Image 1 (spheres, rainbow, N blue to C red):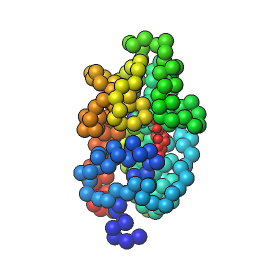
Image 2 (cartoon, helix red, strand yellow):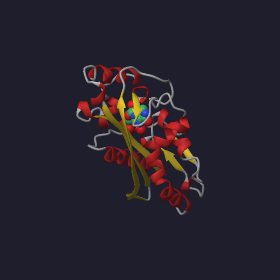
Image 3 (cartoon, rainbow, N blue to C red):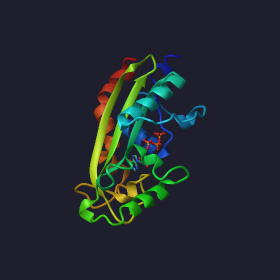
Length: 207
Ligand code: ITT
C-alpha cells in the first residue's frame, strides 16, 4: 500500500444512485474516493443483518477486507408504518429477485392500495459505516432518517429507487421532483453523511 492508497476511501456500494449521492455529499472531504466500478469486479456480500447498521457493517467490513482499503458503506431503505415496517432492510429485495426499482415501487403502491392518505406515513433510514482495514472492530458509524409519506402515483424523475413515491414531511414534492441539492439537504443519506463527516475528515487526515 503506498502513501496515496493509505488514505483513499472506497465508496462500497453497487448502487449507482447511491454512488452519485455520495460523490456529492463527500466532495468537501480532502481525500480520494474510489467507486467499486473503478476496481476489479467483486460479488456482493450477503446482507443477513437484522438492522440497517448491521448490514452496513457487513458491507463495509467485506469490501475493506477484500481490497485492503478504507471502505464507506451504506445500508438504507424505506420503512412504511402501514406495512409493519416493510420493506425496511429488504428494500432492495422487496418482491424477490428479478424485479426492477420500478417494479418494486409499483408493488409497494399495490400493497398500500386500500390505505388512506393519513395512514401512509413512512421514513427513509440510512446507516453509514466507515471501516479501517487495519482495525475493523473500531469503526465510524452514523444514522440518518427523513420522515414523510407515500403518495398514490409516482411523480418525478430525479433520484432513484422509491424516490418518486416519497414526499418528505412538510413538503409537497417527492424527492424525485427535487434537485440534487434539495434532496441532499433533507435526505436520510445527507443527514448520515453530515453527522460522520468531521470524524471521517479526521480519519483520512491522520490514517
Ligand atoms: P448496496 O448494498 O451495494 O449498497 P443496494 O441497492 O442493494 O446497494 P441497500 O441494500 O442498502 O442497497 O438497499 C437500499 C434500497 O432502498 C435501494 O435499492 C433503494 O431501493 C432504497 N433506497 C435507499 N435509499 C434511497 C433513496 O435515497 N431514494 C430512494 N430509494 C432509496
